[in-house]
Image 1 (spheres, rainbow, N blue to C red):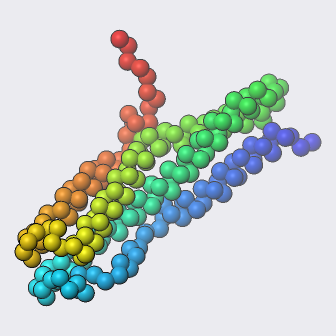
Image 2 (cartoon, one colour):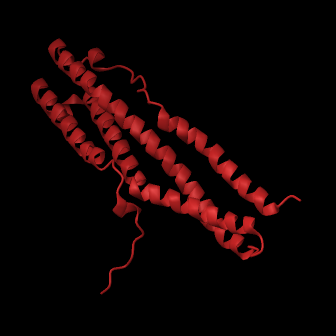
Image 3 (spheres, rainbow, N blue to C red):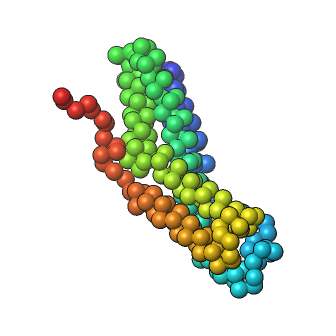
Length: 202
């Protein structure tokens, strides 16, 4: 005889696994940078020497930009997956619990596994600070390209002379890199983050 609870549990686990496959693909692949259009070598605002310095600086940071983009995409994919399944599971558990049959082991396993999976995803999200880490990498990537485009379009905002413009630009890029470096050092699991929070006694 087909057990409805067994079908429900297998369906839940199969759907959760199937929807994780695209996330796994993102976690295992390395992102690539998009072509950004005209670059420093094409700029009419700078001398050949300045173009060479700017182009070399960009080449040196390309690996970093690829890393930032890869990490941002990975953390975003897992964050969306976790939020969806935590929401679905936590909403479903109270309703399923009302229908649990104490004589049916499958019904007990169903509510336990669904609740445990939601707790696991929540613990992983907190331990790896998924939301904050994603925002850190994405913000750094966005800040760099905003600065990059601003120098290409309106270099006078960076200073009156070409040397001032380059010095200001290099300083801003380095400041952005230092800011994202904080995100990189936080890119480690934390037991404190995964642990449930309790109010301190007064």
